[in-house]
Length: 136
Image (cartoon, helix red, strand yellow):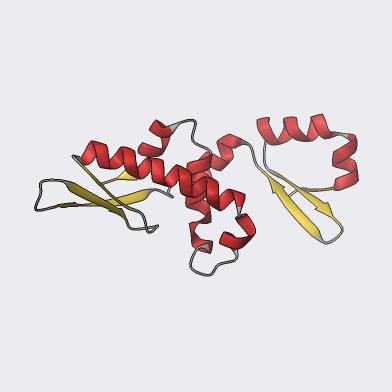
């Protein structure tokens, strides 16, 4: 990938952003650190396959319990639509917490793999976008 020094990016920041958004991803190097910059369109494409698989169980009382395969989230509601809404709310809450405490969650062996899913939740515009990430 094309790599730019951080000082050059700083001097031509607008050009750098325009290239990333309209043309292609670029890499920034500062000392030994590298950062890859993507447009939101590129990120959405990269994350497209990070979806949530829902398992529904009809309970004896007629309610529905829904759980996710990828992340330990379980909710109970009156119907599948209700369950999906509740799962999306829980995912948004978890994603915000994961992002707020990123070092803790990302460096936890059992939660590191959640990162692309969390990012996919965080880039959604609203709860409906998160609901659309749920596959039953």
